[in-house]
Amino acid sequence: MRTYGQYCAIARTLDVVGDRWTLLIVRELLLQGPCRYTDLRNGLPRIATNLLADRLRELEQAGLVESRAAPPPVATTLFSLTDRGRALQPVLRELVTWGAELMPSGPSEEDSFRSHWLGFPASLYLRAAPDQAPVALELRTGEESVTILAADGSVRVQPGATPEPDLVLSGAPQLLLGAISGLLPLEDARALGLVIDGDPGVLVRLQ
Image (tube, rainbow, N blue to C red; front, side, top):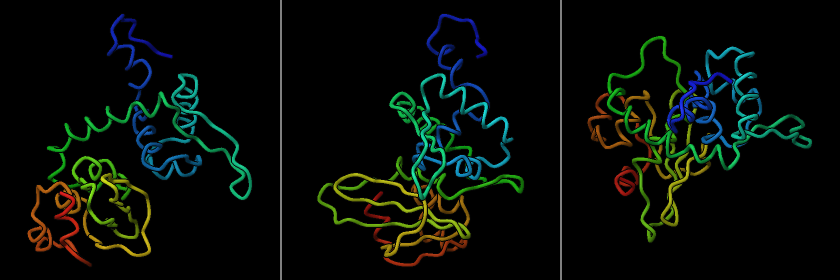
């Protein structure tokens, strides 16, 4: 493991998670839960196969990731975060908050995007009251979806669509991000191309 060689908690942390792609691997395992190698590859566009294998091995050695053989019908290796790895969640949430002002311009032509990446912003900006009826909000970009489930005072994010959403928002990533963060009023987002299917009040209640 490369090291800064400094007796400083920040430097020691960066020794472990400061390499390129490392925190994005943690992001995928936080958002998707236990993953097959192919799931991680799909969530990490442009990463080289050998580099992903190296990073996973380093994270296992550091005690942040563990692997196990899943029984049939999965019958493959699953990677998941340890408690130590999951403890990085607040760090990633702060990075989302800090980076929010870099997002309004939208993706460039070269940028990749996956719908489940909206999970962190959704968990930051959306809130559920304890006495609120359960609701399901689906965010859809192209053929991909992520579902926001709000119930019992908590907000939970799961990749993929849901059978009976109360509200579906479909459109470009920057419109979805603007809508859920409240930085772009829903009607303004609609005027820019956001498609709203269901009860818009669902989003209002979660903000």
